[in-house]
Amino acid sequence: MTKLFSSLIALAAAGVASVTFAQAPAASAPAAGGAKTIEAKVAMCIGCHAIPGYQSSFPEVHRVPMISGQNAKYIVAALNAYKTGERKHPTMRGIGEGLSEQDMAEIGAYYEKQGKPAVAEKPSREPSAQVAALLNKAACASCHGANFSKPVDPSYPKIAGQHPDYLFVALKAYKNEPNNVVGRTNGVMGGISKQFTNAELKALAQYIGSLQGEMQVQPQSRFR
Image 1 (cartoon, helix red, strand yellow):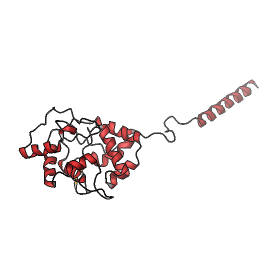
Image 2 (cartoon, helix red, strand yellow; image 1 turned 90 degrees about the vertical axis):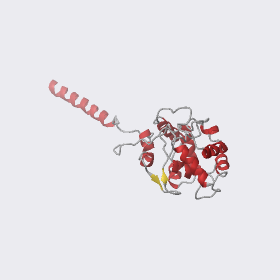
Image 3 (cartoon, rainbow, N blue to C red; image 1 turned 60 degrees about the vertical axis):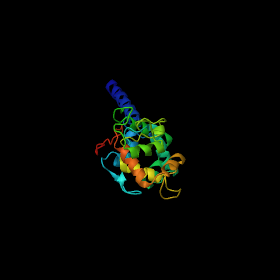
Image 4 (cartoon, helix red, strand yellow; image 1 turned 30 degrees about the vertical axis):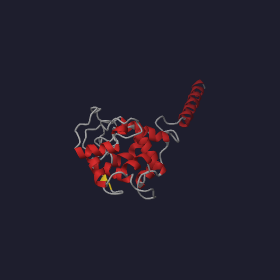
């Protein structure tokens, strides 16, 4: 009888333990509605910005911009501009619309940390007399810094060393009158870009893009 009673107690205890274990959530299971990791948030970015030489075909063929090493606040400002339609790009508009302010801030901080070491205070090469005159007329250094890699406000982009073809397309975009298809809306950049011919904008883009900069394309593993 004593042995039978002891066995019943043991079985009851085992039953309680089983119920308790079954009701407890698995330790590795993600919480319902949990926040995405930063890796998940940037997964949509690496398909273009982490591939060396990758090109966009809108509004014309050009290399996608380098964002590793770019100012975090500028990345946020750019994403918001795509989200609101101030910048016309179908792919980037779709991405921007799906991001919260927190998402943008985390993505910006993630890419800002991936840059190269800081460059010298002066540009790595001097411009030609023609380009020097264009730079002076546009007053580029007053916003982007004397080395074009230290903007006076972190919501402005670093542009030294950026792909010249991207810089040219971006500068031309500010010349477009507001419409629903192409272009960028920015009062300051619009006023500046409209002072120049496309040939002059290309000369500016080629010089600035030839400089040593802090941005880079940082490839990501395809197995994540």
